[in-house]
Length: 199
Image (cartoon, rainbow, N blue to C red; front, side, top):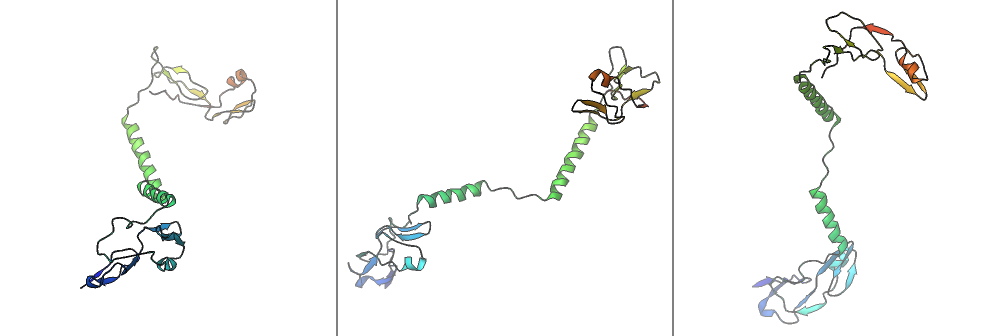
C-alpha cells in the first residue's frame, strides 16, 4: 500500500516495503519566502522565480516518512515580511471610514441645524429689565434704556461698524472718521422701534 511522503522537497508516494535510507531526497530546513527571494535554509540557495525555486535540488537523503515534520514546516520570514504583516494587521484594525457623499453630509448638517433650532425655541427667553424697570435697546448706535410703556422712536445704524487701517465708519452711511470720539459722534441714519435685550 502506497503512502505519501511528508518531507519538504519530496512529497512522493512510496511503499513502506521498499523504503530505505537512500529512498527520500528532501530539504530538512525551512522554505524561505522573504521579499522576492525564495529558497531553503538548509542549502542556502536563493532564487527569485517560482519555477526556479521548485527546481532546487534536495540537499539531504534519508527514509520516506508519513509523519508531518515539527521543524522546518513553517517558512522563514525576514523582518521586512514580519513588519509588512504587522502593517496589514494594523490597517485592518484601523481601516479608514468610507468617504461620505456630499448629499449625505448636507442632509446630516440640515438635521443638526433643525434640532438646534428646536432646542433654542424650547428655551423661553425673557426681556432684560434694568433695576429702574426699563428695557435696554440693542440696536447699534442706540443702546439706550427706555420705558416700554412709552412710544419712543429709536435712532440707530442698520449697518455694521467698520475699522479699516485708521478709518472708522458705518457701512450704512459711510461717514469716515479717524478719531474714535469723532466716530462715536457720527449721527445715526435710520429710525424705527427699539429692540429689547433678551436673556
